[in-house]
Length: 253
Image 1: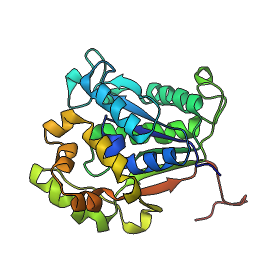
Image 2 (image 1 turned 30 degrees about the vertical axis):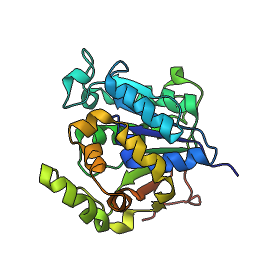
Image 3 (image 1 turned 60 degrees about the vertical axis):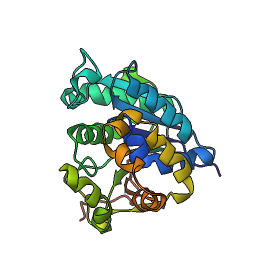
């Protein structure tokens, strides 16, 4: 049976490679269609070209860029609103159109914290994606966005408390807090070491971020062993948009 098609929705170029590069490469290698919706940065910027290169390395489709401004980098999309300021209904409708066009079985996005650093664009992407995954299957919502399509599963990329030490030592010197979840909330722990030969080059394809010492820059400076320790496991929390429990006649805890 072929791997299920997968659409990832992330805030910035490089989020896809850092956060879900292993899963994207794994599914593509298994014959699935994969693609990434990126909320910020204009398609005519160097970071868009870097994103296209990273997705090629991961075996994914060409970028799907919404083209809004990064909350902290106004020049990322001159004349466009910041992604975290886009009205929720408009943002959800735009993402619904991508979901109905690509028709993925699986959707991946940021967790409720916005992953380790809690960036406001990550948090907004999480909220928009949760709503869009549910709305995409309802024919009376966003009728102009295409025929209804209901993804089977939504996975929130996250980090458990037990993994905090690995990343915390690298983020604390640059003043970034680490936001993790209780280990018992993690429902999928994926070994992606076999796909690090794609994930790491995809991360390093984001040369702008390597040069300025952001997370890809941290990865560039690490040994192979340290890269495996930080990047060899991806953690997810599964949400089922379609009910999987038996029909009930009352509300149960």
